[in-house]
Image (cartoon, rainbow, N blue to C red; front, side):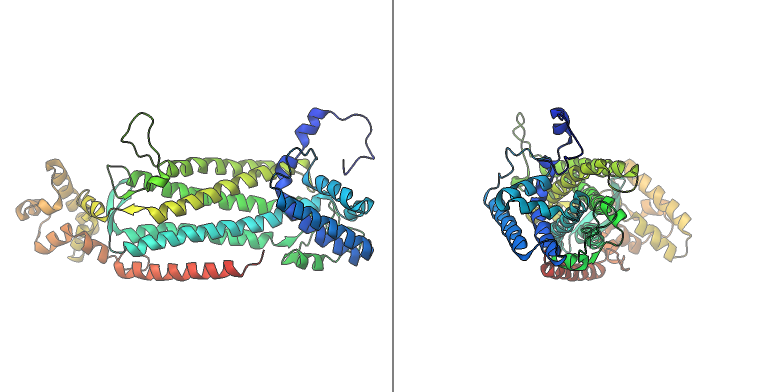
Length: 469
């Protein structure tokens, strides 16, 4: 069955048929297709295209199809339709008869697929936001449980300054919060109805698009029929949101891979999310994190591919846009799976605060605090930086930490060295506590960040709970 045949004659090349089919991908739209068709039946009835009896017959047929699909997970196996829209119309004709041919009145596959793409984008954004909320809650639970643990902070993967472990976790909370915000924005922009736009110019039938939008759960009607039939911004935005989320997940994965290695030993992944070696019995590999890190590259590729498809097209629909679904489905599937695994890893992660504390003794993490203290005593920061740098060089050459310095040694590099400077140099707790500025790592500030984060997750859960698909 074809939805277009009258213009053509002769045998079609089976290889091109196979090359051009999209049913293997867009079968995922089947329930959206049935929902749109059910609403469109009522729109055609309102436009007096369908008689009440015909509308009832078509609605009953569409509901029968929906039940069949829900009962049979493998309903698509062995089907050879050109696309899901063709399959639905063909099945409907078998159930309801020739009246199924009226369902195509005043519409095109162009506005139909654009509508279903937007419905998918809206639902997928919600699924991703719910998964991110789980991950954010897992990070908050860890942050609350280890609110006083001190972690060596790194830049360039070299020891830098001490921070609270909770502060570190809340940094990722902020990233995933922005991901949720992007998904919400994407959903809001996708929330306009293409149906009624036809192929590109609108329809000559009096379709009540505002009522159709309400029936399908759209906030508004698209304002330009030419734009909306070829617009793939919702798909591109969704894939971009997925790509950036995967970048954040990849960074978290990289941290946990490093922090779980024996050289650091700050965390340990649960056995459920690790694997072993076929030759080395002692190995415990963080494969869950490595797979997230690896798959992030695939989602970045999905985004690049989708944008490349869109960039050179003339206005209105072109068949190139059939390829949007492969990138969109792959990005959403990969990202959703990665977020779900990351949430489970975070919920079962074992933390080693004593190991973190031991590592704060290395790397001269309080060097900046020493320089700052000299500035408070009147020295220019450039001079203070120079003095402390030479002190660090001396200690490093002898394999010493600040804690093991004698006053006489320290005075050779930092004139005026005294017991207060020694306390500044050896206390990472003091270093953390003094960073008491908004957004800083001081316990008071981190407590405020935690409280705000908890309110944010509660609000997010409330919003998601009120959304009706």
